[in-house]
Image (cartoon, rainbow, N blue to C red; front, side, top):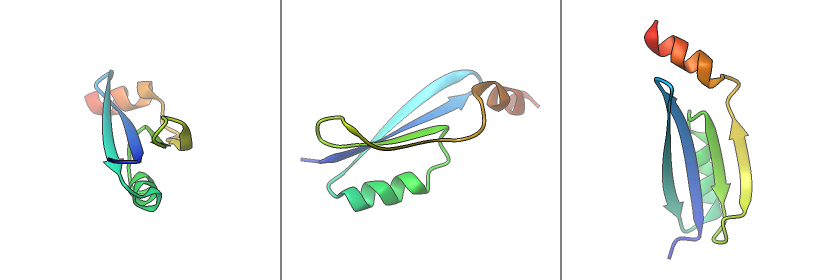
Length: 69
């Protein structure tokens, strides 16, 4: 059973898309999270407690504008 979850949030054309990836080891989850270009990235433990969280400096509105340009 996986112990750690990485939850990614991507904005595409004004729609929020969420993806989840599971890892047995915290180190692997953290490595994966650090390479993501998602708008928001969270690493959670087996109890869904947030261990790490990062958010890009780009707002969803800016992403939408770039997508249509």
